[in-house]
Image 1 (tube, rainbow, N blue to C red):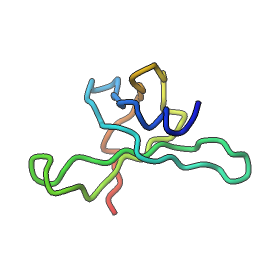
Image 2: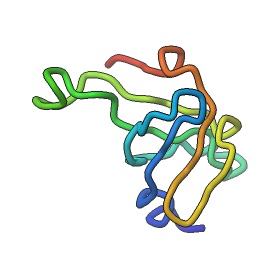
Image 3: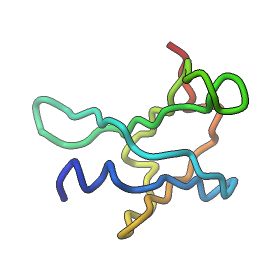
Image 4: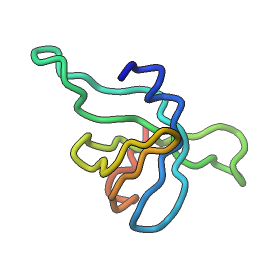
Length: 84
């Protein structure tokens, strides 16, 4: 699978049923070349507007299924939401 194919998919949390967004970046282990985690922008600051000041960094091990249109993850959202 290519990176651009992975970025086109919507990410859904199986625990809450919530749509988290689309993958914008991935972290790759430089030694092995394996994907370590996927990065998704967090919720917007005011009603989804004005950008975001956080992001979800989801380890690849938390991905349950990669389908043709969606990526299903199993996470506790507050645990993987990181502010920058």
